[in-house]
Amino acid sequence: MKLSVSMITFQGASYLKAQMDSILGQSVPVHEIIVCDDGSTDGTREILASYVAEYPQIQLHFNEKNLGTVANMQQCLRKTTGDLVFLADQDDVWLPTKVEKMLAFFQQNPEADAVFSNADIIDEVGETQFGMTLWDIIGFPYGQVDLTDFETRVDNVVTGAGLAFKRNPELLEKDIPKIPGLLHDGWIGLHFAAKNTLNANPEKLFQYRSHANQQVGGKIKERQALLDFNLAIYDGVPVMKDFATWKAAMKRLYTNLDLPYMDKAKIQDQIDLYAEYGKTYFQLRASLFLFVKAIR
Image (cartoon, rainbow, N blue to C red; front, side, top):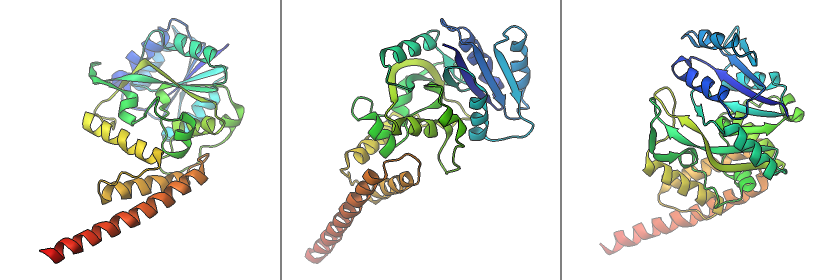
């Protein structure tokens, strides 16, 4: 089986060497590493070029103009030739047995066409952050929900940095639609979830770096709130703490209606439920307000 890595870069000089070394140091080596740089001027291209002479499996492609994250990753994926394609961020660190363990997971779960793993969160200097994992940060309630149903009804939980998928010409030929909020990992996750061939590996197989130039929620209180919010939407039982929570849930649901591969019938049922609940809830609050006002 031929193994490919697809990695895009842009102004990534600060952490790129650590990531390249971690990919090249795998217990099971990959056969090709395709890197598409999107116009870096901070030394990223020079760092990449320094690896090529020693590691012929690295193929570099320097964009003449900036394409943006999604378009750059799409072209990078299309340049791969492997039977199994791993996505990689420019600023993470793969654990030495990541590829080995992902291959084992695919072998143990032959029905899976795409698998994504969990990760530890690290800071700028590589220190772990309060024991948090990537799935904590994104609010993925692993083990509490059906993955396919959750992915196609509530929220994308696939992070490209932890994703590998079996080569799929149908997926690679399609252009990723330009929909606000839809990135390449969400597009891939939805594609395979709609076919019920997406799987989650709970092992922490890489270190996901949170740093100043990257927006990642990191506070324990915030991650628990997001997890509770996602579970409330999934269960279909609105937890009405305040108007802002209700409004946010409705916005999420309506956004999901516009995304490809989503289970629109189930989402519409949730919207109807939330609308009716909201109507009853706010009528009750209004009545209570009038009652309290009357007895004062």
